[in-house]
Structures are given as C-alpha cells and as structure tokens.
Amino acid sequence: MRFYKALSFLLISTVLFGCVQYHSPERSTWSSYLYGASFMDMNEISRTAKKPIYLGDGGKVVSADTKTDNSALEYGNKQENDNAIILNYMKNLEYDLYDALRKPGISVQRAGTEVVVILVRDALMELNVADISETGSDTLKKISKILKKYDATFIEIAGYTDAMNNQQAEQALSFDMAQRVGVYFSQNGIKPTRLFIVARGASRPIAAQDDIGRLTNRRVELRIAPVR
Image (cartoon, rainbow, N blue to C red):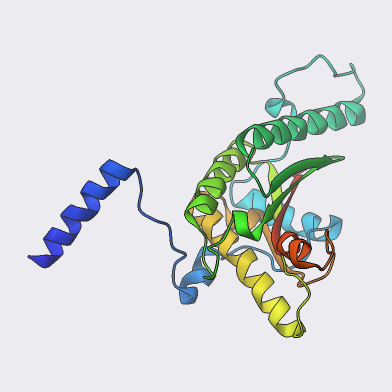
C-alpha cells in the first residue's frame, strides 16, 4: 500500500511540477552508459581512429545533405565546397547553442571549425554535492537536443578544477564532472561513440587563482568538432 501511495505521489508531482529532480545513476553503472566512449584527448589522430567506429554505430559525416544554404558552393571545387559545408554546419550549431544557453556561467564560442561550450561548475552541479543540479540538468537537456540535431560531430568533454594541494584530487574531481556529463548525454540519446572524456585537473586555468577565479576555473568544457 505504501508503495502505491508513493508511486501516486510521484506521478502527481511529475504532472504538477514537470519533472523529478535528476540524479546521476550509481557510479557502478557508468561504464555501461559510457561503453564506446574514448578516454583520451580529442585530436586529429584520435578522431581519425574513432571515425570508422562511429560510422559503424550509425554515425554520419558532414556532407552536402546537411547543408541548408548552397549559395556559398563553388561549382567543381570539391575541397572548397567541403570546407564551406563544414563551416556553415558548425556556424549553425554555434548559433543554436548560443540562443539556447543564455545563462550566467555559460559561454559559447567558435574556433575555426570547432565550437566550444564552457560550463562553470556552479551553473552545472549542486553546490556541495557531486551531482548535476536541476539547473544543470535543464542546460544539459537543451545541449543534448541540439547535439542530436547536429549529429555529425564528435564531442570532447573535459573536466577542470581550480588549483588544489593534491594533484590526484584535482584529477579525480575533474574526471568525475566529465563522466557525469557523459553519462547524462548517453541517457539523453547521444551515442557514446561520439564522446571523448578527459580530466585535466587544474591545467589550463581561464581565470586567476583568487576566490572569484577559482569558481570560474572549476568547469566542464565541451569541444565539438565535425566528423569529416
């Protein structure tokens, strides 16, 4: 009887309030969600090695079929046409992410043919708990929806921390954040074979190591690259 009352309350709460607070699944299950993901930096060599695996998993490459505006294409010049198609594809991805993620602690920028999304930890995670917050879940759900639309891409998920006294702790915390985001993406329809998951600890700070800068350096960066 108590079980049915609890279930009824859960269903009513879902109807009235839209959703139940997200919690990452048990850590022991993460490997199943991330099966097929690569735990290394995303670079030209690793993307080339991963491409046939992703294509075998039903993945796509950026092609003329993904382009909506053919005005920039040059007749007969395949290399220039391919570059124009990729640039347009990634530009549209950048615009969609920018429009969807106008929130404090989040930035979207494009570097050549790649798009980078910076998610400060406080915009993504619970304050004093190692879990994704309600606001962070909403943000990641929007990102997941867009990444499913632009599915001819690889995604590097890199976790970062501020400088700590223990380098092993830095690596562990940054890896925890990156994996949680990867698990969330997998739960929301992103193929793990698209993912590169890395922990970079306190390397590559983007702010000073003062009280305010530390909050900025605790972050997850998504680097999105086209599958060529």
